Length: 85
Image 1 (cartoon, rainbow, N blue to C red):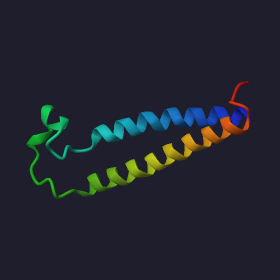
Image 2 (cartoon, rainbow, N blue to C red):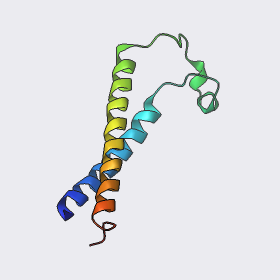
Image 3 (spheres, helix red, strand yellow):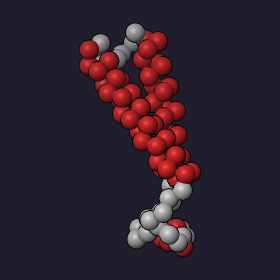
């Protein structure tokens, strides 16, 4: 059980960092903090290219994976007495 716990914690760290990076890579849609940093200069906000759609898909898949890892760690900690070893 300890090996699975360590694997899930490492996976959580990796997915958290990647998810943060992918969210920062998205184009700003305007009207928010992205305008402060130059994101409001883009034109054609309604059109998204293939790269943007793939980035969206990968972000969603990574977000779902992150959520599953969180639930898995929570269940493991709940049923193994808090995860203390």
